[in-house]
Image (cartoon, rainbow, N blue to C red; front, side):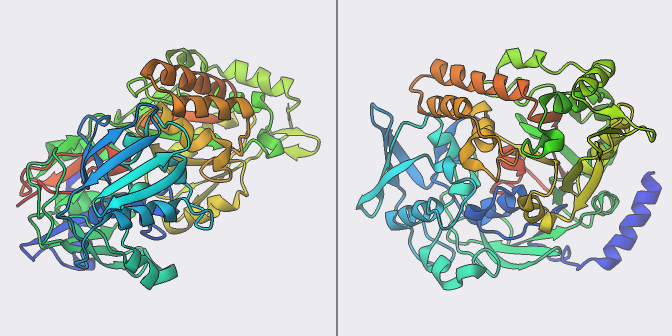
Length: 523
């Protein structure tokens, strides 16, 4: 296997744009491109990893995945009622364009994010903003309509990066496509869709967050990020030394990478990353909870984890990882794999096995359409599940999409089932992303509208104590699990693979972005 992969690497090297010869260029790969790089208009992980390099947030996320630390905001105070945050900004920050960062940029960014006209799918991450004020150029008073127990944690997310108003207005609809200004350690130079993103060093950058030893600037002049969807090509390219780093190394080749003398493999810990299949409950074929439950319990997650990811994932029987903040332990008893029980549930729901082995009801075959992104682990997992479900008379119609159009196709909602691998920070984070009715049609692609769920989410967000927050988020987890709105499949491990000529550097866990700012990396 290693010899054939090295041969592939020679072919790959000859077909790539060679940029590895430049001593001060860091060459990176990723498997999936984004439709654009405007953080406020998407939930897409492939947007977040690049955005986090050239734009910054008020607070950063420490290595533990739970603790917000100062970043553009050097300090903050929270009122006793939990509704008002006073952020003190650094006075030495500037955008790549040279413009100085002030409170006006912060206010503009959050007003744009929460403007209904933008339709920002993650606008809720900023809380319900009542007012934003700037008593001086380096102070922002951030007033909420109600307390938001995870505001600081959410402010670490790429959705809440700070934008330069001048850049947004100058580029208009091309913002995030033809360019974007930021205060990050890297500056966006160019983007060639499906091919390459190029960034350069932000020479003025000196305000790196506390978890990095190097506060800036970065130690490379340029960063070239090539889009390489084919897994064998990414493996071969790393083995052959064509690239310096990738954070999307195929899990089935991790063991081989660990044995390779030229590579270093580091696992991001903690890491909460769920591969799931969700049901659009407003589609008649999957509107019955028994049908959803039958599909979920008819598969063997342990076999999938072992056969497809070679142990680089754990079977997921809950929506929230057991190690995540506010995980509800009782939800572990909801999903119990049992193929015979699955068959009985479908019988009870009126779906009878036809002459061709596929169940039908009222002249309709139980053949749900399943949408997912073509690259990554999902295609093989979807095919495995398709095989399991044939045993109970269900036929999944698999429809993979290229990563650049997958989000748009999912937004059309012409499917019964879809899949993504979602990174998250906590139970509250995951529940608020997907199960709040405000987030219909995306990211609440289930079209789940439930007043009780909405109220528990509101109470969890508004909680002033950890115990109260955990209580309400546990109620949400229990309800959505018992409704079988998703099939949780795998908790995916995340690795960063580097050439051993790269020194220092530690993988981060934030939203599938192990590189994050890249401040400590060097040759």
